[in-house]
Length: 306
Image (cartoon, rainbow, N blue to C red):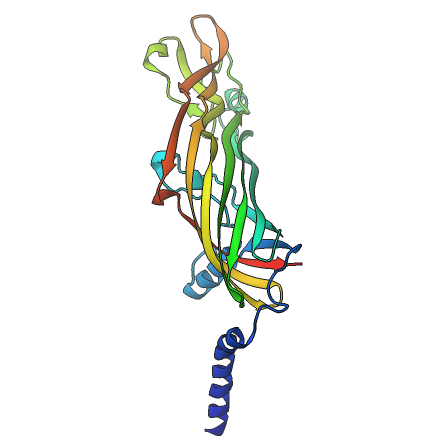
């Protein structure tokens, strides 16, 4: 029993230690000062990983950083969060003990090469029992960045401080897919076998001329640019000198523009006896302005001052 009491008392002291520390400790060496630099990284991936570890989520992995300054899940405004840069770092410079210049930078670069087997049409023509294969390829490319530059102010002289401020947001993103095929379109093979998702439906007005068509290059979604204002507010707890954990929410008013969408395709034209390649526009450019709770983002971060 004595050991149990000692253990419980020790645990209680550990839990209450931060509260006593907050009451007894003024800023001292804990808080940032004029001239300090800071780097903040998101703690969300680690917290998500730990939570999923305990609830047994399948495929649990540390594969995303969610600290972007603009988070929009509204499909009616482009579902920005689907392509928003997911790696984000905040850099601060303390221009005084209470004010800081702040840059939040996020980026995304992805070039995924996906290979697929298709039967070798030429080999099957020579030998119907042939098991020869060719390789089709689809390259999915995603690029983007988000940059928020602004000013923040701190309130409070102890180890818990309120932080609030705002800044200007610039962001852009693009997504495209490029296709290549092992079986070429020819006069003798006008509908070649392919397996990488590049086949497309033949429009009714072209059905008389083309037996089949397939994509070569698709710029068909999310070629977007964003500009706007971001406001944020949160708290930071300095649990040790110049190192803090903080929580923050932000809201954005954003003007967006979407580029013209298009695809490039190929097909055998039976009227001319040639393989045609052409580019088709699928949507004109568009623009919009969004402000509201759909633009709210949140983050938990770990900050290091030096």
